[in-house]
Image (cartoon, rainbow, N blue to C red):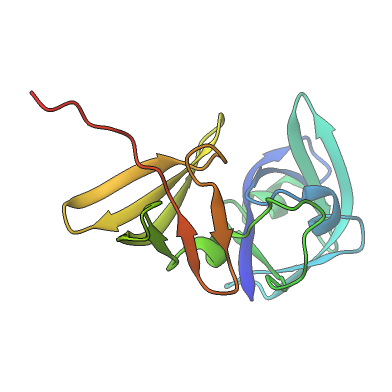
Length: 165
């Protein structure tokens, strides 16, 4: 599956490096020197340098050797082909595309809704679940989502309790 892994930002320095807004949890492998990323407008780009500067990822690309050339790439989205069915290194590690569309059930096995989005926040991810009563956001933590069955596209959720006034 073709997944978005980053966005090229502004130029950094004069040698053709760009800042990158990382949108993958595996930047070391997705952006390794020699790796190739796809774009919608420029075709394929080959990574020639990878470094972190003040907490920001900087990449260089084959054929791009100066600030002006890299500035033309600004806001270009980068994609990689990813096998989302491949087992993860961690048991509780899922791709967003594996979660979107899953049916959410309560512990009583009553259908609660369907996952429409995964919102990535610095502290934790939130599952956006469309229910008959509107969208409900549930922190994606084991205490509130104790069962995730990707193969059967279902999960058990414990929604937050709402205070009724």
